[in-house]
Amino acid sequence: MADSIPTLRAWYGGTFDPIHYGHLRAVEALAKEAKLTQVTMLPNNVPPHRLQPGASSAQRREMVELAIAGHPLFRLDARELQRPTPSWTSETMAQLRQEAGPDAPLAFIIGQDSLLTLRTWHRYEDLLACCHLLVCRRPGYPVEMKTEEDRRWLSARLAAHADELHRQPAGKIYLADTPLYPISATDIRARLAQRQPCDDLLPPVVLDYIHRHGLYRSPPDAR
Ligand code: ATP
Image (cartoon, rainbow, N blue to C red; front, side):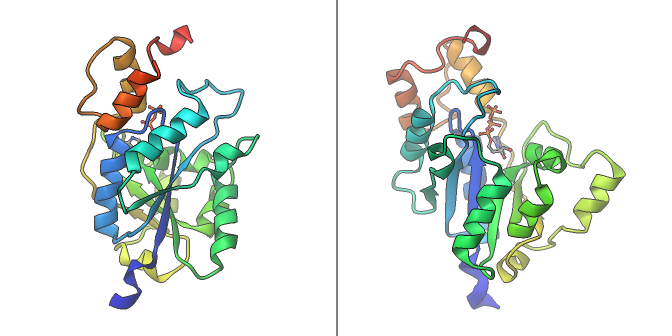
């Protein structure tokens, strides 16, 4: 039904260290394709035992705020950064499901690389019980999941069309036909450490913030 189409709300989790055009442009294209009117950026808290981001939580949050300022599609939810402990995506989406009620269609956005490892995520079946998954293409990663069992698991959950995700609350996986953006935060950090230009890779306001705050000036293994 056409009048029930623009109801799907989506969240986009990531370290955003820093946020770049591979995030922003892929999601803008996804929003057009899947008729999303609202995407909420959900920056991650990085667990203490993992390699820490080059920027602090506050700085990663500020860079997201700068990147999305004045863009009506995007919002920011800093709940994971405000918790002292790391959060599992399945728990955050369960909380968002409680807030939205049982019938609202909700989705979590990931890139193809994240889809390939999804079945190693903490309680990934619970995640899918809370929301759909919208998957953006990403260059450099296989298009197929690794094992036959993974492929069967995926095909049982695939949505043939994004409209299906607007009509039910959770449980579907949609592989979007978004353009390929060969950009990663890892590459941007390495380029910045080598004083190479990054102008085509992230918004000028974010690059300006990075330079003003002296971020990513040393290679990751020197931190
Ligand atoms: P890093 O290089 O530090 O691992 P990243 O560039 O992969 O970072 P993240 O913040 O870890 O960025 O990613 C958040 C989400 O964005 C993930 O689901 C990831 O798959 C997706 N993503 C990141 N870059 C791209 C891209 N170029 N195209 C499509 N999806 C992307």
